[in-house]
Length: 155
Image (cartoon, rainbow, N blue to C red; front, side, top):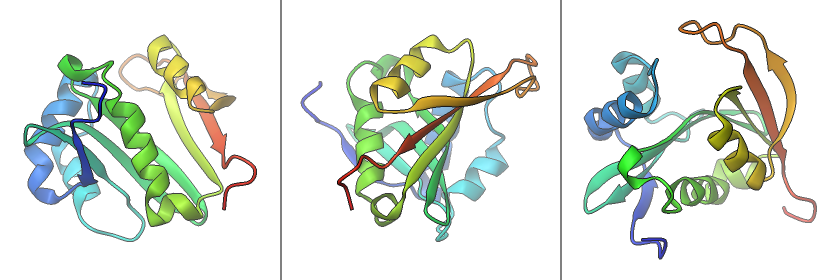
């Protein structure tokens, strides 16, 4: 399925149940339903996208837009659909949004034990710039702060 047989589109409040399910399947301490609902409401400072396969939401990226920076607050792909290029497609789609084209920097936090996610982000140009000790309340685990500047030459 690496041929792009999915559809990336802006997320909508109607996607809430599916987004909640993907978050629940992906994270031991998922965002509360109410918080996810808020992230799906149209607002100039948010840029939520979903990946659909066969009319089902299978991936989601939630992003805050702060000045000329994008802050990825969640990137999740349904476990059965991982390693098909969906997370990469979501990142690329984010870069193509109006906010993505204006952004000079993209940031995120990731659990220090999540080696797969860290390797994924590094492949996509993110570098670790800081650690936040005891960041995650469920495990008191540190978060790595990762940053990806806009590649030189892009406008």
